Length: 252
Ligand code: NAI
Image (cartoon, rainbow, N blue to C red; front, side):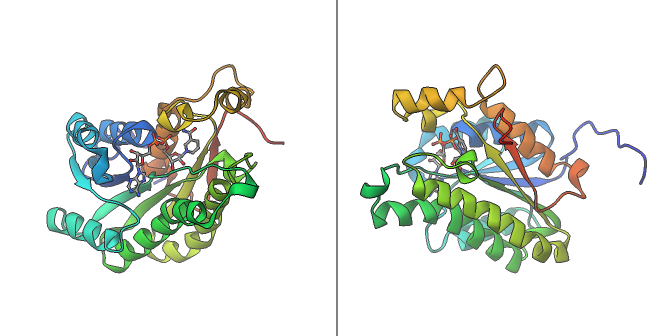
């Protein structure tokens, strides 16, 4: 149609999966997608405990204990989805992410593998597997969470920055392939957002992160979540392979 749509609940009847939904950005993404009408499957590691069921209850969704790096993660997720929702899910948000920061000289292989495993390999494997199993519908949406650290770099985060730069490559390379099933794939690249992840950063680095924004305030989880919601919304039907920075800053 050429006419603008009049949506109240643009995601009514849609099923969305959000990984790392127990807290932080993921919990807010679950809230925003639910507000827009989606049924949200909230996934997080077993250690997330009550926080995960709290998010799921808050958004009227379901919770799933899932370590995205487990060898059977994709199978488990596909099974969970297909048992409950015929035809599979409509939206997956790969939000689960970790940091294991160290200066370059002290950056060991364990930290590399762990961060690359959660942030880059898991989103790729899970997307590929859900599509292969028919657990992500044609016309579906894949939304990845990159980071400004994957574009501009960040001291002490060679592993993290590499994983998040990899996510951008993944989105760009996957877009034409997924388009064969009319599935879009896009990413958000948040800057400094106030969450437990950034609260753990040493004070000086944290303050430098906050100052990176050229807008007056630092980002909140909802700023990222609303951008994710745009990529889930029919309003972005013709948008794929894109990365939107939610960092309050122009890098030009
Ligand atoms: P957070 O640490 O508050 O939450 C991350 C969630 O992911 C936690 O609930 C955690 O249990 C879960 N998680 C970790 N490993 C997992 C695994 N193997 N399987 C399933 N779940 C797992 O972090 P925050 O700040 O909410 O970050 C969310 C995403 O946004 C991450 O991908 C992060 O890299 C990204 N990001 C965050 C920024 C920030 O400033 N907070 C900036 C740029 C990107």
